[in-house]
Image (cartoon, rainbow, N blue to C red; front, side):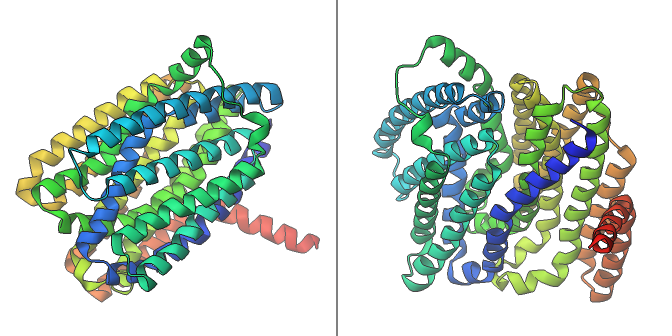
Length: 472
């Protein structure tokens, strides 16, 4: 496939997936004042912990088999028979494991009961089901179904949150219930749209099939747990040393870096698919080096944009009782940026089904995060969690960048990368000066920088728009 077509397909798929994510993410973000005003910091912290521990348990329950679903379906898009075999085998294995582990969870709950155990388990099952079905739609290449399924899940959650929290005053329980119900609704939609019954039959699975699928997905379990450690161990350490209220503050700060992460994850779904399909093509390393550096420019611009805009937006979007989260936001955005760079590079490993390297490097990053956090938490408090996250992702990015350059000949634009990091540092320094005139000058500086970094892309886009308008 020609370079032009690869780029067009990447843009098209990203645009389709963006529909499902962006509309509801925007609404959810704008509702932050509502959430933070009604919920206490403790309630907000509880919801965050349920979501966080759900993310930890999900890869254990599924053995990351949803990743096998996506990757193996990519190779058999033209064969309904092979699709049926892959889906039936993987779904049978996954559901059997999940039922057994649910029993273990129930037994443990008799001894360790937080009051939210069964809501956590219900949310875990809802997430499991919708995740498996969404990955099937991606594997089929039906990104419109993936996008609309995601839209239904997010829109349903936002709507139900308003009903359960504002009207019924259900607090943290209401937010968790909204997540569960909305995901199940989305799962029904996706199942019907992909005609799941045509491809699924529960049956005994051959050992050779189990070995192949688990061989791909198993290394992704420690990888997923390590990602959880990188993303969520901070909350556990904060809870242990500082208390649940600080966890709520940290969670509120994470919502803003979450905007960046959401934007990148939308793109990364299409990026991973594109790299997996075409990395082996002739001349692909040069093409993907060029595309990757353009993406890095956009990522740098977006991350810095959040940092430079927050001084103007924070007081509007967040209740005063969460004010301490203001100074955590730039650090968490930096961490999200380095995390996205790690995700960008990970696509090359997925393309060649080298999940073992992904796991090894992520485990290393997770160990660094925990060690740094524990070393600093009693000395600098909440800042320890943010700084350890930034450093761990940076270390992981450096390790994978060196490896990817050696294995795939994909090169990084170092000057662009370093300039972006310097801009983040400048933006963060203005938070401590706390003067409106400084914020305005800094934002103008950012706008000039953003234009320079993306000048080629902006000129190309404007030219394309002009040509289309003239042709009408």
